[in-house]
Image 1 (tube, rainbow, N blue to C red):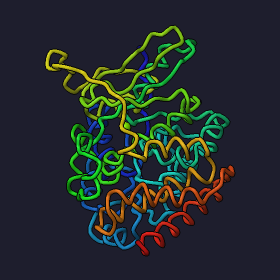
Image 2: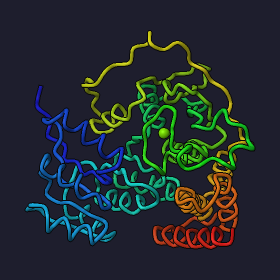
Image 3: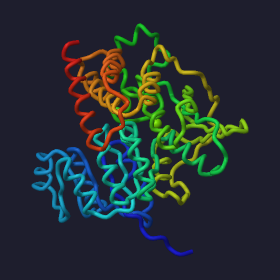
Image 4: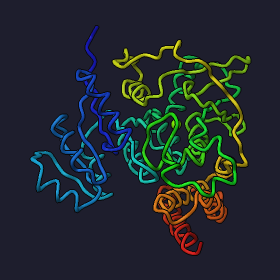
Length: 387
Ligand code: MG
């Protein structure tokens, strides 16, 4: 067989949980990938290590002070980009075949747009990109002939199932949710939970933002909106089911009543490998799932009263436009405030709903999305200030 060309990969958010796992997968396939650029917010020690390992052409460090420190301390002959504009410049300057977007929050939106405009495929772990800009991103990707390949385990599962059943009409998508750390807690106790309680996820090991989003079930809400855009499926055909073991990553029910489930270990390296090698499927270098170690698989409906974020996501996702942007942005501010100890856990949905309700369904341009995002953040900050 003819040897395939090495895929040139750019990793954004390289020091986070998904970024580190991406680099761990790439190290297992030295003949298939080369890392051409890395981006971090400020973790220059991690960056220094990865630079030595992968010898990229360029790096981006968001915080200018950290970038100065990096240049002082690390021997690196490539280009160092800094600040938000630096990231856009790096994506444009350094050619890549695939951009892995593992940035946290709505900061991931503009880099995705830039990559698509450059005609580069995007492996997307940043769900906020599609929540805020799905109306723009998907048509733009189609127009430029760019693939958006999901990394999120649920969407990766659905992506793979529908790939095998390309022409079969879908009845509904079923996203599984672990239910987070507070699934069995009673509703009144939720107001008293601490950031430390909320960061203890039962099945997945993840960053702080996504762990809090999992605890409120906002994470699943964001995933519903993401699935709507990614697979062009109406909200009525997207269902969430609690599955505490997180072994089935999601399911697709086709019109004939047959349901296909995708199973695998609770380890992000599997969906990451799939996204990296797409459209190829390569043998895994990691441990395989042993079915005999599973005693049971349970499913039940989510408690929408206890976790209002899920219903809110359907409401503001359906409304779309500026309301969806604000819903995402306000939640991000609330999560930050909760982690800092300035608001209660139950304030997160209350404040987020209040801010999102002030925004319209108006469809926005790229600049409009950035503007609505900033405006919603400011409003959420003010709201938190008077709590
Ligand atoms: Mg997920």
